[in-house]
Image (cartoon, rainbow, N blue to C red):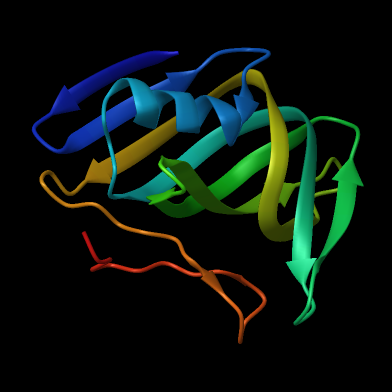
Length: 143
């Protein structure tokens, strides 16, 4: 991965074989990013898995062939002392269709370019919310 920053803004370029969201979590860990928005992402995955939240669980859909990353956005927070990555993707298919949802995994093909905007001095949390059945973003978690 290549990464450059201009204050709180980071431009990232992931290289072939890197896996998202794992590589983004490693970036956050290495650069102590505890609160951020993933403003945009584009590129290619050689394989990906997205999920649709049906109200109680993610229903996965695997895409075993290369897809174009048309749009990627989300957030970086902390859960149990580790980076918690939440990404959504719109992926273009070879027939010019689109598949979208929560990005469960994606292996970078040619590259993925991503803009991350950090909130220095802040820590976002991602506690488990029993009423929702999943982890939710908390912009002002307790210390």
